[in-house]
Amino acid sequence: MKLCNKYTLDFNISRSSIGKYEMIQLALDWVDILKKSDSYKNLTQVEIINKVLYDVLFGIVTKDNLKELNIKMKKKDTKSK
Image (tube, rainbow, N blue to C red; front, side, top):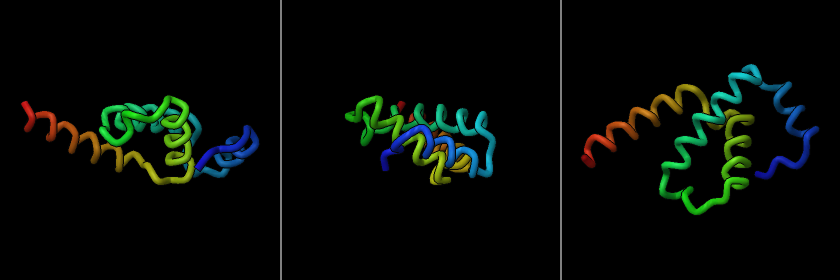
């Protein structure tokens, strides 16, 4: 899952169907969600960044996925209060 080098990263960004700025926004949103997740709280920042970049670059995470996750998390937060 590790993104080895700059060439690999640049290559995958250029092959992506979304723009690099949209990719950055997706990555930032995905980081916010992962940080709140119990299963990822014990990872280092480097591990989280590697996971986020991998998920965004290879289409595992999309805008629609993030919207659904945000809705679920908001519902979960309101239920716990």
